[in-house]
Amino acid sequence: MILMNKKIASIIIFASSLCLARFASAQEVTIPNPLQGTDSISELLTDKILPGVAGIVASLSTIMIIIAGILYLTSAGSPEKINTAKKAITYAIVGLVIAIAAGTIATIIKTTLGVT
Image (cartoon, rainbow, N blue to C red):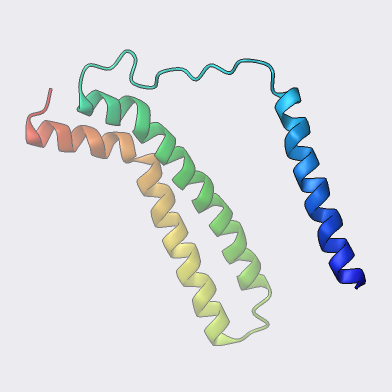
C-alpha cells in the first residue's frame, strides 16, 4: 500500500514538473545552422565534424589512460590484471595519437583522392 502511494506521488510530482516547465521555457531558443559557411561535404567534414570528433576521442583516450593506470595500480601483482591494464593503456595511447593526427590524416586522404 505504501509502495503504491509512493508511485502515485512520484507520478503526480513528475507531471506537475512538466506543467511548470512549460511556463519556465518562455524564452525563444535559436539554434545556429551548422552548414552555414561551407560549400562542400569535404569542407564540412574537415572544418566542422573532424575537430569535434577528434576532441571527443582525445578526451575519452585521456580518461581511459587514467582508468588503465588505476587498474595497473590496483592489480596487486596479478599477471592477468597487469596485462589487461597494459593493453588498455596501449589502446588508449593509440586512440590519442590518432585523435591528435586526425587533421593530418584527413589532409593526406584528401590529397591522395584529389579532393579540393
